[in-house]
Image (cartoon, rainbow, N blue to C red):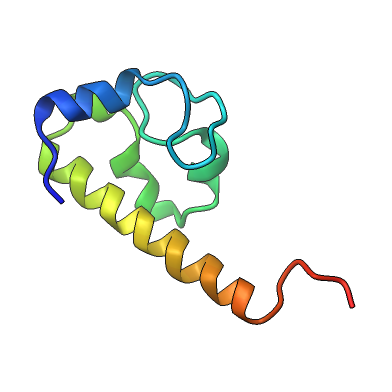
Length: 84
């Protein structure tokens, strides 16, 4: 996945989070709720993205997508969120 400068600027200007559809702060890739679910070292690349290089933003987005996919898939596999 490779992002162009226009795609990064478009992502920064979107009003909604691409992951959960909540309102987000302009200039960030994800909303505060989604960013808070990430480990601290992963959050920096997703904040104030218009000021960062495109490869930094693309790498941070890929890492966040892998984290959400792996982490929440393991929770679903072990029956997380279900009451028995």
